[in-house]
Image (cartoon, rainbow, N blue to C red; front, side):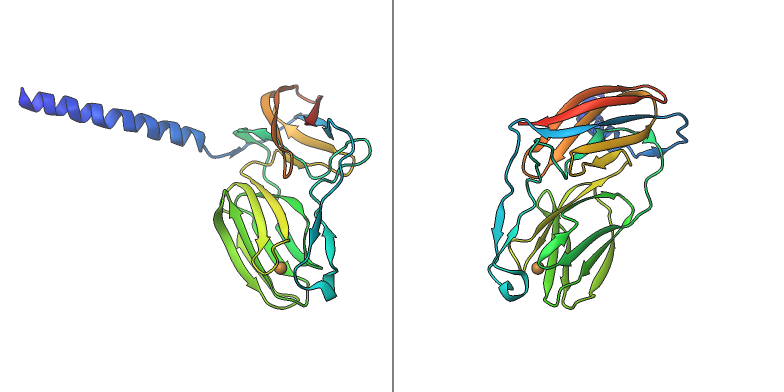
Length: 243
Ligand SMILES: [Cu+2]
């Protein structure tokens, strides 16, 4: 009898935790590459509801002789029509579809700013981190506040190649120059897009289905664009309106 009770207690202790583990695994399920024939696409525009929005300016605390006293922050690249550049639009949680792009990601240090300012990366791919300036940059990147890379790049032409192992918004900073800031949006699937200067984006070769779509911007945050139905061979239009 005693043994039975002990067994019951043990089972009760073990099962709830197994449940949690199963849920965690489900959430982290890997992306599966499948052949996509006659896929659909999602296309649209990212706009700021308030219309035009001025970019911010950063003030340099060193290297002024090389890079000047101030630089555009490139945070709000919003034109007169309210169209926003550098918004990442992505399908949230898509589990299978086309193969990931093979291109390396890149963060270059050019005249005391990161180039590109915002870019897309894919888990498992490589990223080149380069210094094109004649000054020392210490590129330090984070996902959710945790260090991913911390790299000293002393000379013009210094280059380090790393693998992108984690997903999320990777914030890129420089320990030597506090005004420097960039972002690499690292995804485990290829269904991400970055808006151009007219706020336009297209995500293509999507298997027919219904997908949660989200949009992220460094200064305006993340918004949900709801569920979008994608039909085979058709184009679905969405608008990403930031407030
Ligand atoms: Cu720097």
